[in-house]
Length: 96
Image (cartoon, rainbow, N blue to C red; front, top):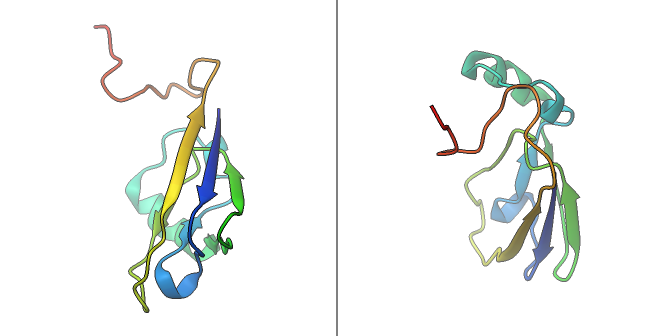
């Protein structure tokens, strides 16, 4: 799986850019209390308008509140050609 985030506006720490925890996509299902401990390893992705961020969509990620609110429009495109790893499932995809 792969995600492309095409930025239509600058994204930085001041306007609530995406934060992510590197390597978290390889951990499978992560309990909330573990995520809370992993937050200290989160990085902020700074991307200029017209830039593209390529990431694994299963990375634990979020955006903080903007200190200086402004536009942060993004075209978010996800590609997948295989089943999800480590027992993960798409929401609503259960067949049982």
